[in-house]
Image 1 (tube, rainbow, N blue to C red):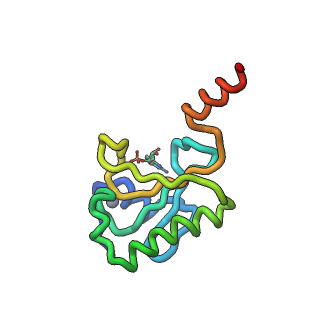
Image 2 (tube, rainbow, N blue to C red):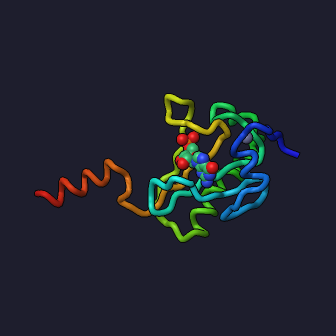
Length: 122
Ligand code: 5GP
Ligand code: ZN
């Protein structure tokens, strides 16, 4: 059984949340506050606080985690997308259980919106 924390939001989502995909110790869920047309979070069942602790995963688990991200994106029909990991509060991390953002479709980012508006105004 991978390590879990009782007081961790993503540990409880992994245990009982609604997921898009689940396999091999990983789940993909829809972000509650999407920042792109498609915004998924890939969460390993094994709790580590952040990407800084990635060495707690075996090489095999690390490889499977990356493959799970790529397979999830493909399965939801994305060919072009961004993968993002925020590390620490200064890096924008707000939930301290390692997770990978998959962001596809757009433009949905505020900066992209501004860029689009600027072009439209030319
Ligand atoms: P971070 O800022 O830590 O990189 O990303 C945390 C993400 O988790 C945010 O994009 C936020 O919208 C999402 N989130 C926070 N609470 C919940 C929740 O209860 N359910 C889901 N599905 N996403 C959540
Ligand atoms: Zn956790």
